[in-house]
Amino acid sequence: MPNDQSVDIASIKKTLIHKGMVWDLVSDTFEFNGQRLTREYVDHTGAVAVLAFNEKEELLLMKQYRRPVGKYLIELPAGILDVPGESLLDCAKRELAEEAGFDAADWSELISFHTTPGGNNELITIFVAKQLSETSLVFEATGEEVDMPQSWVPISEAVKLVLSGKIMSPSAVVGIMAYQLSKDGS
Image 1 (cartoon, rainbow, N blue to C red):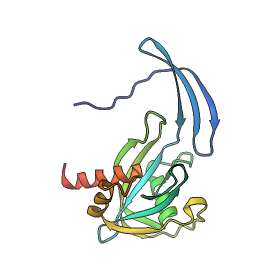
Image 2 (image 1 turned 60 degrees about the vertical axis):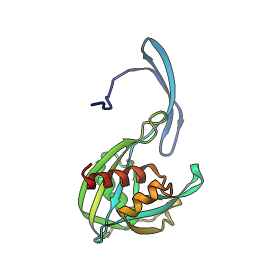
Image 3 (image 1 turned 45 degrees about the horizontal axis):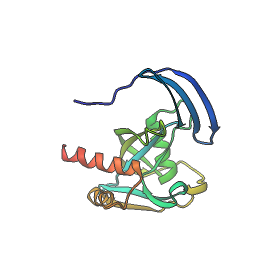
Image 4 (image 1 turned 180 degrees about the vertical axis):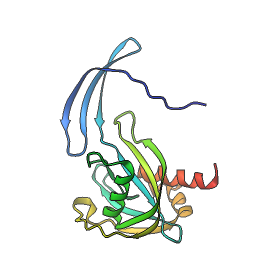
């Protein structure tokens, strides 16, 4: 069965082109199949996203403005790994509390994926959170996180939104479809 495989190919030269607030742009030169190649890509910290379900088994979706695409996207609570030493699960718990105002008693890891492997090394891990309760965390939202309206939808409706192109955020698309397929036993 085909599968992704890690390979260790050393850099000949790796140069920081731009130091960003969240990610960096690098130029990376390496040898591959007898050729010297240089690729520029985004060096990303990685991120998490959360499929949060209420007691009615409805999925929490949030609307967030995304400047690069000039749209409000329907998304999952999510965020980057920006706290040194924080585990993926702890990051997911923090992001659910900060962005959505919830804690969860039941957590499971669903899937991990590369967002755009031809242009960045970001890896997103998606968790499922159930048995929600209001968080006691006090968090002051800033920027695009100040106004993120929430809605609750059945997973079957979320799948229809993905398939009709009404949800295009990659973590939401991957998470919703992976969860539905796992429920179907596929």
